[in-house]
Structure formats: C-alpha cells, structure tokens
Image (cartoon, rainbow, N blue to C red; front, side, top):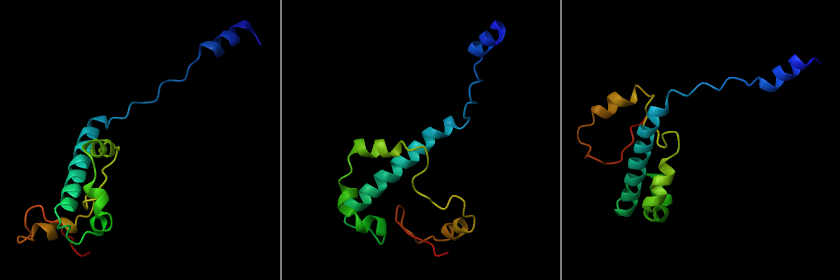
Length: 110
C-alpha cells in the first residue's frame, strides 16, 4: 500500500449522524408524563380510584410514588399514557359527554 493511501485511511472519518429534529418535543413529552403520573398517584391516594384496573391492582404502589420517582419516570422519551391520540372516532364521543365531572376517569367503548 502506498503512503498516500495509508494516510487517507487514517484521516478519513465518516460524517456525523444527522441531528434529530424532534428534540424540542421532548420537554412537552416529559411534562405530559409528569402530569399523568401525578394524576394517577393522586387518584390512587384519593380513595376513589374509579374502575381503572391499573390503579385498583396497584393502589399502594401508585400512592407511594415519590416526587423523585415521578420525575425520573416522566423522563422517558415517549408519552407513557395513550389518550387515544390517533383514534379520531374516540374524540367526538368524548366531546359529547357533557355530564362527566372534570378530572373524572372514564372510558368510551369502542
């Protein structure tokens, strides 16, 4: 191998990967996760967990969540709770439910 080709191999570095353009979205994801986890904790601690199996089955664990644990879990890079974001048929049904108290947990049958 010639000296020039040897130097070329030593100098060459692949280009850096492109930056992900969604980094601005992460703060919103963290905020949504944190609010969701706090609401679930408060719901479990309230003594009125409704009919949410997620809360009923692990009520003691939800109630015992510390602020530090909530913040740590909220830092996942995806939204933890699926609120039917992609289900277009679900949202009009919810909007029509006028008798649901604010903050109440409810499910709309699909």
